[in-house]
Each structure stands twice: as C-alpha cells, then as structure tokens.
Image (cartoon, rainbow, N blue to C red; front, side):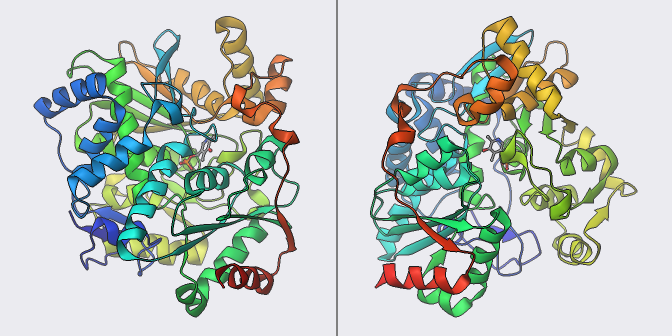
Length: 475
Ligand SMILES: *Cc1c(COP(=O)(O)O)cnc(C)c1O
C-alpha cells in the first residue's frame, strides 16, 4: 500500500515512512492511494474474529490491509500488546451500552487517560518504539496540549525506548485532574513544561521550533498530532467493532454520531464507510465552535480567528479550524490534489474561507458520503447530562453529551445510532456538578491523584528557552 498527499504529491511512500512524519512535504495530509474494499464474506469473518478472538485480532486484520512494511507476526504482536483488557478495562475493549430508544454509547474512554485518544495513541506508542528500534533512531516528540492529547501521548510513550516527550501546556489552565494526570508522571523520558501563557503560545513555540529545520533535524523533533495517519487508522477499528456489537447480520445499517473538533475521529468513520462498512449516516456534532456544522449545512468552510474561538464546557472540541478536514475534501473532490491545494493552501491563507455551496459535489456530502451535522450549546449540554442521569442513571461527559443531543435529531427508525463516548465524566467534574449536583464517579486507580508529587518545569513563552531545554536533555 502506497500513500499520497492530499495536495498532489504522489511520490510513493509506505506506512513506516509516514509513521514518523507529520505533514507531507507539500503541506498536505497523507492518505492511502485507495481504500481496501471489504466484501460481505470478509465482514462476516471479521464479525467472528471480533467476537471470538477479540479486538486486538480485529485490529490486526484491518491494519494489515494498510501496513505492508511490518512483518505480519510483528504487527499482530503489536496489536495484541496494545489492546488488552488490562489497559482498556474490559475484554470487549469498546463495549456498547444502550442509552434509550435506538441510541447506543460506544465506550472509547476506559484507557489510561480516560479519553478516546488513548485508543490510537497507545498503538502509536508501540509502533514508534518498534520502528525506532528497527532503525536504531531516537525521536523527541514536541507537543502542545490543552489537556487530552498531551496526557494520552505521555501515557502512551512513558518508558518507551528511543522516545522522549516534551509537552507544553498553558500554566494553570488545565483542570486539576488533568494537571495531576500529566505532572505526576515520573518517567525519565516524559518532560512536562508549563508555559506562562495560553494554549496558542504553546502552539506557537512548538511551531517555531519545528520551523527551524536545522534544529529539527539535529534534535530529531517529531510530533504526535491528530493528522498522523497511524492515529486515524487505529480509530477505524472501533467503527467495525461498534457495528458488530449493534447488529447481527451484515444487511443491517448503523449510524454514528461523533463529538467533533479536529475531524480526526469522524474521519476514521469516513474511512470505514469507504471500505464498505454499512454506515447510514455519519453525524458530526460540534459545540459552540461550529465550523464543521456550518460547512455541512451551507458548504462554506470558514476558519475562525482566535477571538472568535469560544472557551466552552466541552473544551476538547474548542477549535478554530478542523485539521483533518482536508482529507474528506480530497475524497469529495475526486482526489484532485491541485484543487485541494488551491482551497487549503491558497484560499484559506488569503481569505480564511472557501465556499463549495455551488459545487456539483455539494450534494454528495449527504447523499453519497452520508455526512450530516448538528450543534450543541452549554445549555443543551447541561440538559442532556441531567436527563441521562435522571432518566437512565447514566452520567455522560460534556463532549459525549453534545453527541447525544445531536444524535437525537438525526435518529432514523430501525437504524441503531451509536454515539462515540469520547471521555469519562471525571475529567470534567465541574460541568457534571453543574448539571447533576453531584460529583462524578472516579475510577479507583485515580483516587487521590491530585495529592501525588508533581514534576513540571515552568518557563516563559520563549522559544530559545525551550530549545535550550531540549539540547540539555539530549546531551
Ligand atoms: C479530542 C477530543 C474530541 C475531538 O476529536 P477530534 O478527533 O478532534 O474531532 C472530542 N472529545 C474529546 C473528549 C476529545 O478529547
């Protein structure tokens, strides 16, 4: 399987070439040259694989269609090591729970950091360790986080050979639980940096370091952000696992609602659908930061300025642009790399927006690709959390609540609607208390986490200072 860039560069790359890379050299995102097609017989076989052999083996089946530069036995071992009941809490790994008439929750948040990002990041950690050992190389992952991504990356990379993580976060801005999760890690290869500033300052520092190509090469700087194809691929697996739990035969369809920010999670649903998984609708749920909802309704994609990006009570969806969105547009426009470059490279840089409302492909978004969308606000979120607690004794996190709110609007008779549960409520206790009047349940392994000793380096938003830190740790 070869990979190509959404902006037209077709120089062939294999999976392990792009594993450690971020963007393609032309600024595009990587996609496979085609989506392997899953016929009815294969779907039936995978159904049995999931139910009998388990999630890890299903992951191996799917990944091996996209990865031909890791020997099968090694890939199988990597999947088996990643998706264990010990790490993800249950044998099903992603169990389905019924909420109410036709709506199901797929649990993706029982990994080490209690958000769905663990599903992909845990695999990435093992793939990185494997590939770096094979090449005899080292990697310094430099990142910026406002919460979920940083902790998922750290828990995936802690103790891994060949990898160091330098993670910046805005000082004092993460929830106490999130700070405790990250700063209590004492592994030598995990370096937490609290930056005196806001998230954008952290991101600017990371960009400045990455743009210094000499420094980047010399100190082997890499990233683990959500545009990484391996992360997306890992997420494809749970769409299949959700389908196998919600249906008994392959002639049934299901829909998925996905609480969305950077479009990484739902883009994996798009890939699953392109492979032939019988998905009726892919529903993108946004919060007040409704870039995506606006696009799916009007055809206008309009990036928001920082001042127009709201701080909400579902903070992991507070985005100004959806960094994976380019992948879907590439498919929508018949994989025309030049056109995608004109839209994402030129039009967005010039005016911060583009308009496909008059394009012949506009109707394909819904009719051919199954995408629809909806939006949820703070009031909707609170009402949904309260309702599911009072009616069903189920406490859901604020992001998942945005999903449930929008899922109800898109429900069709006889089509199970699966809402992806993207985090556990304990990560966002303040909003849960506001909605229900009670503290959310805390998994036992996180008892008293806030009281653990913390290790974090505080610094000003200063590029020279972070470079100096990296140099000193690499010596
Ligand atoms: C990252 C995240 C999202 C958004 O996922 P995208 O892949 O960026 O669309 C939603 N909910 C939670 C809890 C998250 O951590």
